Figure 1 (cartoon, one colour):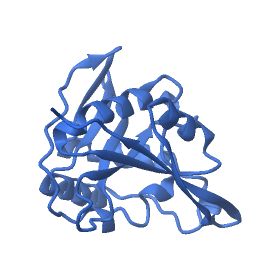
Figure 2: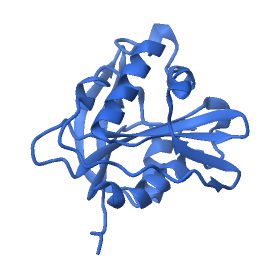
Figure 3: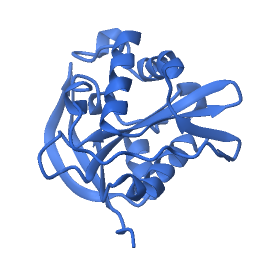
Figure 4: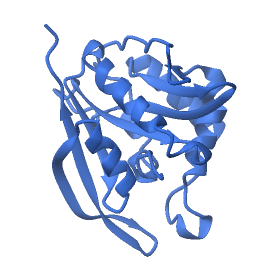
Length: 203
């Protein structure tokens, strides 16, 4: 995003695969408190259309999407049910009457023993990018993650998405790894960068 979103492949194509309910700690809801005019709160069913629209608006033009595809309303609604069943946070950001962004905690491939690690996925509506919304969402995730039972946060970002790399770096994420040439969308080729944040243990 001018970008404060993870690249589409961070969720597209495996959005359902990584969200099967597993033995994940029950997440405490984010307090709905305004920050600089922004209200961040747990997503509800009524937010599904806005979540889909924001995600779809970040996709490249159809001719350049390759295997990427737009999300439908029913798919997002099912995805939200999986979040509720697994206790993983899914938040939306609102400015006045507008839903301007969202952030989700994804299970780390639901591998046994990895319940305390979550992957973050964050998207901001194109018209609202560059206003610090993504930073507020990521900062809230870092602050709230320990109370939700998470000890490590992960972000997977395309190597040419410099804005998202900068966003997570400013939020305290550091380089944990790199998958050379892992992203192949049409003629586009780039690496997948793995950024991580090790959180302080709760007293």
